[in-house]
Image 1 (cartoon, rainbow over the protein chains, first blue to last red):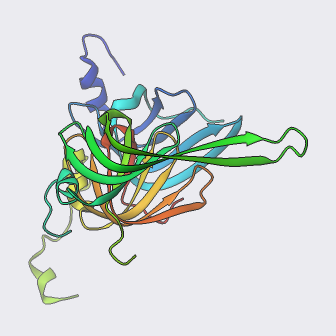
Image 2: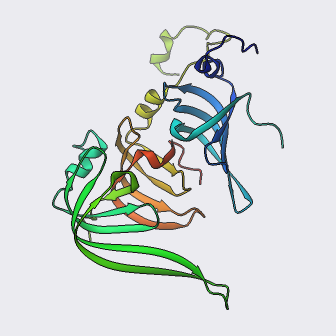
Image 3: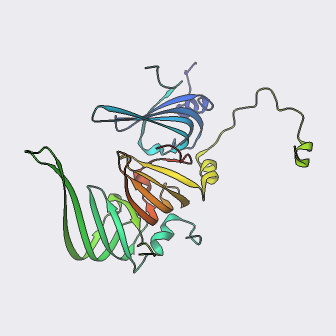
Length: 85
Length: 92
Length: 96
C-alpha cells in the first residue's frame, strides 16, 4: 500500500472493510477487528472484534460481534490488523 | 424514560430528587440534586460521601475493603470526575 | 419464499462495494436495544440504550454494573454515563 502524499484520515478510509489493530492510550488495552466506518473524531465502528486487556501481567481476550469505539482514547491504528502471536 | 431525547434529560428529570453519583477514585455520593450544567458540574445537598479503599492485611494476606462515610450539607461536584448518575430506583 | 421477494433483482453483484457503517448509523441501529458499555477502567455496564449524545454521554435503563473481573456489582434503574469514561459501546450482549 502506497502511503505517499496520503492524508492521515485517507489512510484510515482505505482501511474500511479490512482488518485494523487499535492501540489505546493506556498501554494495556488493544482491539482488533474489521473497520466498518469512522467519523471526524476517529470514533470507529468495528466488527468481529477481539478486545485484549492486560491486567497484572494477565492477558484477557473478549470477542464481540460489533462495537462503536470512542476515538478519544485511541493512540495508534495499524492497518492490516494485529500480527500473529 | 421514553420521554427523554438526550442523556442530560435524565439529569434534568432528577432535579430535587435524591441521586446516586459514582465518581473517580472509588468515591460515591448520595444526595439531593439542586443544580447541574452541561459539563455535569453539580450542586448536591444533604450528601453522604462514601470512599471505598482496599488494603491488604499483612498477616493473613487478605484483602480488606474499607468504606468510610461522612455527611456534608452542600457541595459542588466538578463534572469531569463524574462516571455515573442514577436516580433512585422507583421500586425501593 | 414470500410474495414480497418476487420483485427482488435476480442476483446480487458479484463483489458489492464495501458498505460503510458510520458511528452515527451504528448508534441508530442499537437504540432501544440491549447494549454493553465498557469504560476505560474495565468496568462494564449492560442495559437498554435509551439515548445518547455527541459526547457519548449515555442514558440506559435496567442497568447492571460488572467489575473488572466480570462480577455483578450493582443494579440501577435508569443511569446516566458520562461519555469521557466510555471506551466502547457494543450491541453484542452475549460477550463478557
